[in-house]
Image 1 (cartoon, rainbow, N blue to C red):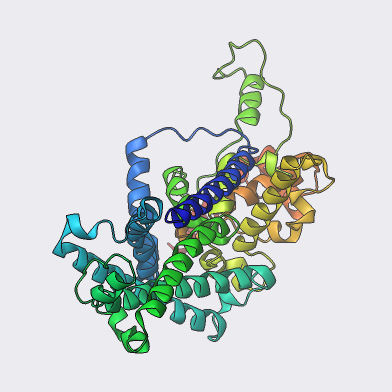
Image 2 (spheres, rainbow, N blue to C red):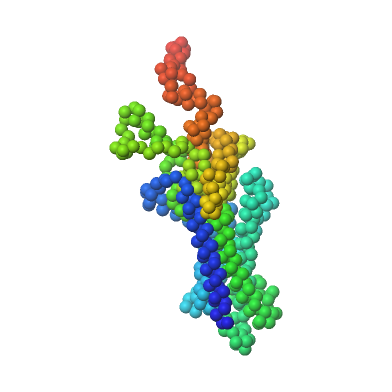
Length: 454
């Protein structure tokens, strides 16, 4: 019976690992539904971008107060996991505070630091809950941020508060039990390792100080189990939530687009075809025959690149992109955040269908029209403000441009005013309906005016 808690813990850990493996495999295969894209160049520059943007939270510090609060959440999540490692080892080995003896007095300092982070996380989460639900911040009231997305954001904050309170409760009862070695020995239990005073959990000690030893052990163990099982459940939940960015922010920033912002990449297939028509050398022309173009632009997620789909899974739904979008600010239907949320929803739908043996991409739905409306796409000014604003370098503009290309090149349904512009560019090499020979006539008029004045 002494091994029962260890066996139970091993079972919980194995089930969690299995579910996480299945879920991560599903997300990976869904991302791979996208078209190939080579982002293996400039590894040094890519590592630098990841270090600054993902590790360093560089873009978050454009707004200092939310940035500091978010930093508490970020650092708390990363560093408290060191304590989680000890808890997991304790669960597997049947020990309690395994690192206390080898680390010595430093152990108490570390636990005090973790408690500070736990307290800071609680404060940050409470402020974020108030800010998100009570303050009139426009990006938190948008039409795409209702029902599940709104509930998801609130759930995450509440869960983090509850998990941090579990740590403090565990440590508060633990501190009292450290002084009751004789009672524990009389009950046939091991003494609790001495950690010294723990500042923040000491605030909760008066709540438990009058309890008997047996009750304290039950509460301490219950808080221990609640905390670790809660973390396992939280880890699984994250894979279904916008908080997947906690993990995907790192690869997503590493594989960022390193080209200058605003540069629109030409379609290689079209460029090569034009070059061949003009008798210009074409890279790869020695190959037997060029690959047939399946579709110009993007109608569904498999027309997008794998990076576009990874972007959608990395979206934090913070809305900074939408808050900076000039089209959205002037009342247009476009919201870059919704573009990313729609892309992820469609990818999830297709991935789930394929995993269950369903129709997958052949279900009669498409990203265009069934999720993202044409009015949204046409409202984009291509200014890149959304890309610049994103804290993890997500690129909604890439998806918008690819879907516009589909509408224009496959359906020929570009707005009439755009068609005139395309025609002028093709015939006059400018958006306006004037031949190149007339382009400098305005300068001739200036010369005449200048001569008249003399």
